[in-house]
Image (cartoon, rainbow, N blue to C red):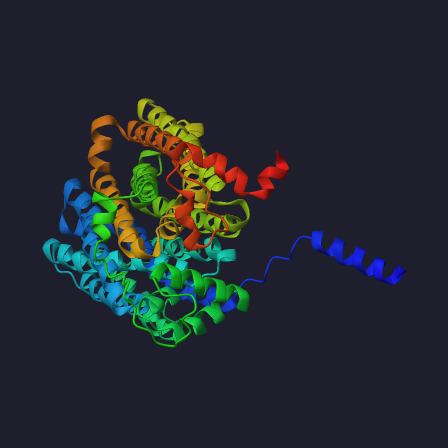
Length: 509
């Protein structure tokens, strides 16, 4: 009797022990890495153009307006790829859409490397831009759909590759800057084709998205993928049941191949978004488009694309000094994206995002102050130079720990399955349009209101973004993709419901 009571007591105590967090799924991790490599394409182009334009301007005798258009137009070109990617990925699958993205960018990069004049260079950037649009849309969608809930934020934010691509672009600038003028910038742009080749080979080892397989009625294949990418077989079964329900397949159905009547190929999606949206869908759409708008409107591409120009205004005179300082920007972005990668599923999306944007606001205002003082002063003020360089680094660092990766994680995970591909594509459209406007007007804006005034403006926009995120974005950490819709539609009331749903918050209260 006594032994029975002891055993019962021990069992009861074990029931109160916190569950051990599951080990990170290595297979899902490998798939996320391969998919995230598509981000290198955009990252390299952003990074390499910041330095290449110095030599392109000298070689082709271009004006500032032509340089702005050359740098920023790829964001608008990418809209074509983004608009096509949603429908394409529903048609041929997420995996082969990634292959298509890499192939298109490879063609564009080769053409940029052989460009004889400005017009041909613009055409080559059109081709590369379409590939980037495809890549930007499909990579986070694929990673989100493959990843288990326990580490979805970690894996979706893993595009450390986009920052790694930027860093590689900066290093390429410095490395090829010693070549003859007509050859150096062409090498900088042409080398961007290499990541596309690696991506095309690596994608052969990736499985198709289980959600896409279910949408096509291929339940047997989807089950195999879920068993490999989930933390346990029980979780795989739960994920399969959720996806089947979202796709309109009875939970009791266990056939390997079924006919799916409730297809998600885009029919009726736009009506549900814009003509007859439910409160939840309307809230999701506003949140997704808003987070992409404020991510770019706060001026990140102005800093990343025009770092040499900013450092020149800050007092660094030689090309070598400007390019080396730009490499430091790339290192800061890459290092701090790793911070976000490891904190996202521990801290949550919302706290990390608000902290990040708060730091961006302070950095932008301090950068505006430093550049204004330098511009107005007749002597070199070392403290102002140091402040300007330091705040550029702090700005990209705070951006990378939250606003950078979370915009892609959040917008790709909150849409219901039936709306996900098109919803993610709309987010990319807003992101690239805003980026294009910023990058195609920064030099002209700096001439009109001074470079310090431009960063004061970006700081004000970032402050508005902080308010938007605080009031409109509920926490999504730990929720399955099929549970997301229930977190939206309440607007101001969502925070109360989140407190009820989160036991950690209840204990803290």
